[in-house]
Length: 354
Image (cartoon, rainbow, N blue to C red):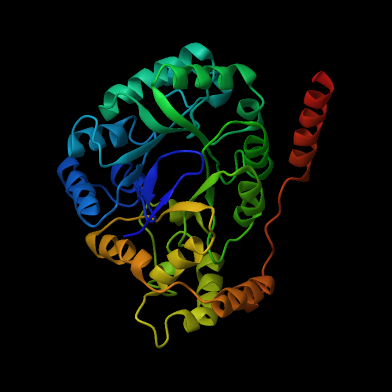
């Protein structure tokens, strides 16, 4: 295993981290507490020291599993968790517009933020949270000076060491992340990025370099496509988050993989490992968080950092293929242009105020 350090911090983490969502939420199959704990302990044995979770994963289960797996205040591990969603209020107390929806309401009032912090500290069994991330940050949290003042106070009190922002693919994304990197004291941005889905994840790289912010990359295998195990007949369980994707996503993805055989032919590496090496080729990526849901994957992905890096020719070829969508005709993803206007208006207002 190799390690990298978050810029402006002393947090040294394994290049491959463990996303606790795969063992705590049931989205990739149900695991008992004993099974989840055993897998996380095996990850540590393989050199993984970075575990990323959130208070929403299993309504706190992800955090509790870490405490049960590794005990209080482990000195050899780095935890990252997330906050912002109100997992505590019963559905009957939510605004009527949010009842029945899968996404919970967010709450960034100082009182709730402090309460959420205390709850996560207790569930994790730690005196301080090494990296506390806003979960699916929107502009209302990026713009919220009171929230960032509260985070600064929690740092001064020693309850969190560093703040970060975890971005959602649909609810708070490109310009929210850029705004946070430019104007807030953060150690990390967590983004989606992979060979097949390079936008907008790759659009954060320049900003991260300029502002010295570490990137955490999730979904490095494009929801499993880059694990190289799908076939045209692949189906997903009823509770699997990939089930909502259209059949065209599977078929087009398999066509794209045919263009990437050069990453494995004549090399002692899997496509899944090559996908991780592609992410780690970016210097400002601090750790990559693959979905790990069995021991075979755990061994495969934990071994990736010690494999040879992709060559400059490899990266050039991937860039050329990405420019033509890997030879597949399909509608390109779009990004909300008005979000940039919102950020620019806020920046202008701040400059006038100063």
